Amino acid sequence: MPARADKPVLRERVESRLLQIAVEVRDENGRFIHGLGLEDFSLGLDGRRLQLVAVDELCEAASSPNGRAAAVGQDARPGEAHSGGLRRRYVLYLEFSLLSLGARLEALDLAARFVRDTLPDGAEAALVATSTIDGLRLLVDFTRDRERLLGALARIRDDPEFIFTFPDRRRGRIAECLLKPFTLCRSACSSWAAQDTQIMVSALDRLRRLFELLPGTSRTATELIWFHETGALFPSEVYSLPVKYSFNRWDAAPELEPLGAAAMGAGARIHTISLGSVVAGAASEARNLGANFSQRTGGFNCATADRTTCLERIVDDGRCRYLLAIRPPRRAVRRLSFVRVDAPGTVSPRVIPLRFLDEEERWKRDALRALLADPPPREIPVGAVFTPRLRTGRRWVV
Image 1 (tube, rainbow, N blue to C red):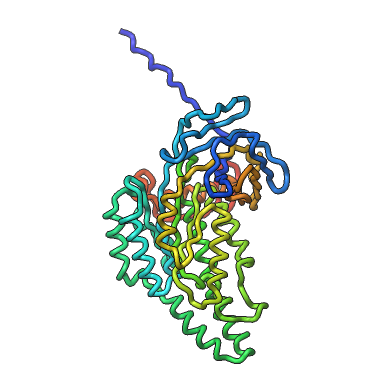
Image 2: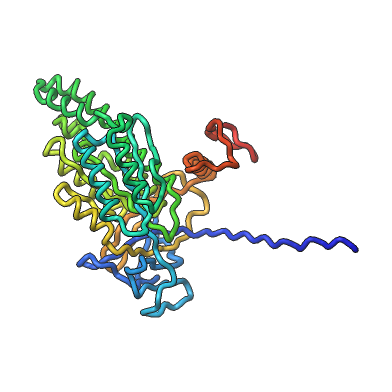
């Protein structure tokens, strides 16, 4: 008998040239506004009018009975049931370089209490620790196993690899600096402040890289809970240096803008948990920094007095968001762009920093994700990491 011919295989490939921006719209009482469509939003990119292609409203299962989607050429019907849902996950982010010994124990206790008493049933959570010495460390990947999360928090409580003395050393330096004459303050203390400022900047950079490695989807919302110590983020302020040498919240703007863009790309909000104060005068500056994070990502800024209540509020806040679809530029722009969103109500975030990646940057990001995978891909044995420098034709020069 003649051999049977193999059946033809149909391969389809679909590419999308749409970029989705996630925003929340609330009324004057803080309640989410449902049912907005194309005509309700106005967008601008770097000051120019931006065409909105589609609007999609996503909510958690119990958050919105009347969600609707509107697209070009499609009429939205009020009261129409929403076909999709939003899944929330949580990241406990412990920045040990910005925690003194006392604040470190308080952060671990709050994180354990959140996992034990506040984390919703069936919700996924991950535990990430970071420091200036060790960098980013994924201790527990996204899991629904509370005992695994609590066990990891208990292990790092007394682990010397997660005990750092930068904030405590800073206290001694501050006390010494305040006793020095003005001329010595300008020399020795400004040098100390510059060193500690570099620690703060590197901490923000690690947080940005974490967001770049989190795979974000339009139907997944990540709630990152960042434990830090009030005042540790403004070393020049707590040294009581002259204005010329001070490092205030406006100086941090170049660091916060790419951080906000990375969080938006991962579909994440940053919630700051402040743990005490190094110097009382620096507390307001740290709160302002937390407000900056909230403005850029739509998260909560938890002050010292209401940390437990704020953790509960993060979970209880019925998470709904609008996905605004736009067409990105034809060519990748290797700089930050800013999208301004206007709608009837309070939009959060209103000004969104975006960064469009070119092919080389996407290659490096995907390589980092593969290296940090747990467990790593078996089909990709990695013995060394190479950084692409130049592409000629179809080959990379590393």
